[in-house]
Amino acid sequence: MARLKITQTKSYIGSKQNHRDTLRTLGLKRLGDVVVKEDRPEFRGMVRHVRHLVTVEEVD
Image 1 (cartoon, rainbow, N blue to C red):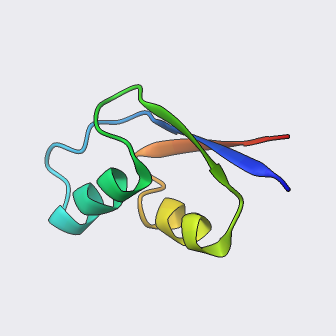
Image 2: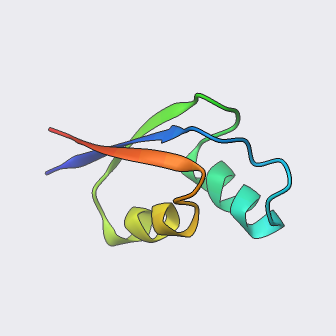
């Protein structure tokens, strides 16, 4: 199964509260944090919600 490497590339300061909550749910707390999650529709939806704050790479 494919995995996603999600990196927070921009600060959440000044963003909406639900964007902050989404980042925290993904496990990202500060700029430069990296998490690896399974490639599932739930995580894809969260990433799409905060796509302006993160970068995503597919990892095998």
